[in-house]
Length: 227
Image 1 (cartoon, rainbow, N blue to C red):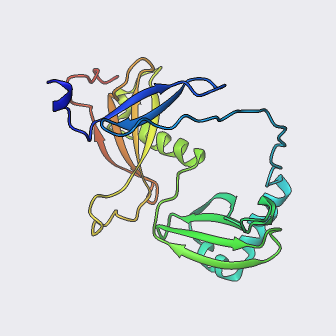
Image 2: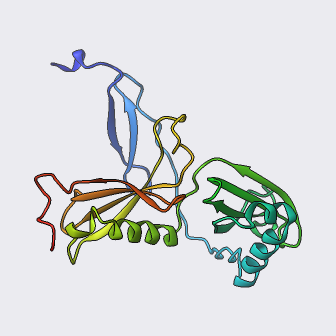
């Protein structure tokens, strides 16, 4: 194929020397006019690190204030639940990071429910409590718990060897009508450090603390079970 046969929609890359700068990669399309030359320059400027938006005292106060709210107490009392974290919500564009409201996030395993508690910027007052059926990112404590449940499963335990490591990927039920659609599902995979593909997999439901499925114990890569 010669140059005239090349589709004009095929992107190419041109290396252009920008005056007084390092080479810059500029994308263009065949047939387009040459890109303009830029007189961009770079200079070093002094910057200040952003202040830490949270102190341990502020995090503790936010969680305590959120738990004490009557609506939150009603959602958490007698339930198996976990505090997932504290963060800042987007604030005004011209404001400081520390001016933004605070979000405390809980998850109820009993109800398969995320609980979002919004407080003012100093965690002095609860502004809003909302619930939603979605799965927030699991925290390290949940990852460790899922791996522990998988390791202890009677179907998988005999096949696990010293040196195998466990990794976790969050999962969602494909069908929203599935009874597990709102559950906190984690896919636990076991493999040796020098392997890319897992030897064994276990689907763990943290809402019920059950291992729903084990894969790999009877395929060609599985090792004989220990006695």
